[in-house]
Amino acid sequence: MTRTNRKALFDTLIEKLYKEGWEVWKIEMYIREWSASEAFQGSIFAYDIPTLRTIYRRIRELKERKTDE
Image (cartoon, rainbow, N blue to C red; front, side, top):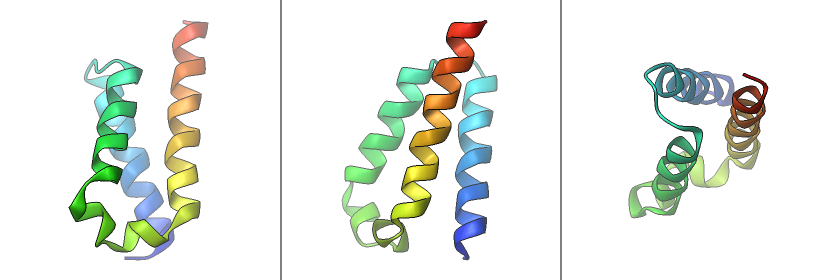
């Protein structure tokens, strides 16, 4: 899986959870718990800092969108 695909996967997941009514803090906690898990530590994502930065930037954008609404 390429970095672009990983970023798109998480962008889609985050947007889907948001549209389903998940609060932004819950999405953030879900991602943080996942990234601290053993499964994550052994995955390719653990070494892909740019993708992680993109994930957290997307969460910040959702927080800003939420405050604007």
